[in-house]
Every structure is written in structure tokens, then in C-alpha cells.
Image (cartoon, rainbow, N blue to C red; front, side, top):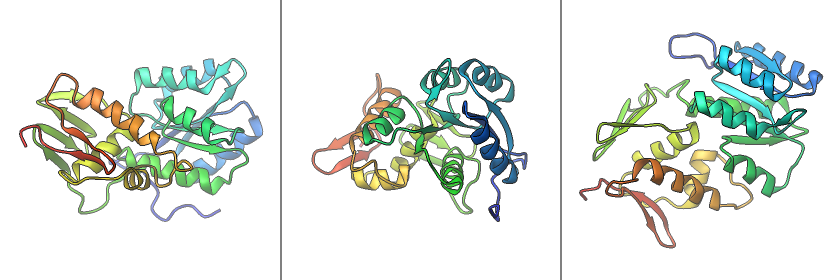
Length: 243
């Protein structure tokens, strides 16, 4: 397998850190080897307790997380991870392949989802996409700071404020807000948002967009003049509050 010609690193050049959580030792070993070949630092865990302990010391940028673990499930790990690192990227692995299960994983707060059996290239591609969303790399020429009214996003620092108050976002919430902020006053359809933020749709399950819009509204608009508006039958639009 060829490593990417432009490996992802932190802005300071240090390696990306990935935690692989799976109770199948052979699978965890293969995944770890492939990720290490990318130049990333990798640790593994086979259960909930070890995963939580490793996350505290290793401070991963991304976690490849099996849904079913011997002492619990991946969703429990996800909740623990997000308590200390709300911006960590989470890619769920599961043997279940129904649309409902995929939606359940994303609804729980996961950023992406692959089903077993999967190709190693698919896992790598999904992880690269999540890490780019999380700001590990930034395309040359991209604006470093976006501003719409009193809503400000520093793309390099991964910081969002509204009215000077910090807003904590998950990687997917950040990417969704960035797409809205790069297109102010433009109505964006659910299909456009699915394509841009998730790079594919969930079997036409556009309600995942509604779910994440609701998350953003609670964080961006709660107690303030709303900026995120629904255009019935068309999609969503972001406008500065005074417009």
C-alpha cells in the first residue's frame, strides 16, 4: 500500500495521533500498521476501560472505534472522550450495516462510520477527511478567519466565538458551520450540505442534516437573535442577526 504523497501532520509538523479501539487483536494490529505507515503515532486498546485510560494520556486527534466492546460499547467511549476532548475525530467500526445503525452512530456523536468488512484504503480515506475537517491541514489560499455579523471563526486555531463568547464545536459541527459561513445569505440544500460536510449521503437520510443544524442552533443561537434560518422546502441559510 502506498502512503499518501502529502501526509497529514499538525501545523507544527508533529505527527497525527490515532487511537485504535477494537477487541480483535489481529484487526487492531493491521490497522495500526497501516496508520503508522502514514507517519502517524498509533496506540491500541481492546476494551472501554483501556481506551479511556489511553485517551487521557495519549490525547489522540482521531479514534477508530469499534461499536461492540467486551466491557461496553463504543458509544460509552465516545461520551468519555468528548468530555475531555470535544474536538476529537471519531470513526466508528461495526459489523452492522443497516442505514439505521449508521444513523445511530452519527446521532450519538460519531463523525463517520464504516462497516466490517472494510478496505484499509477506505478507513484511511475517511480518517484523512476527518482530520482535514479538524484542521490538520488547510488548503493554500483558504481564509484564516471567517466572520458573519458577530459570529467569528478562526480556521487555523479552530476557534469560534459569537459576540466574543467562545463556542465549543465537534469536528462535524465545525465543518457544517464553516460551510454555512463561507456561503452567507445563500440558501444551501440538505443535499449540498450532505455532499460537502459528509462527502456522501446516508442512503438519502437527510434528517442527519436536520439533527446537526439543531446542534448548531443550540450552540450558536441559544439566547440570541437567530442566525441559522430554515427556508421551507429549500434548505438553510446563515445571516448576520442585524440583516
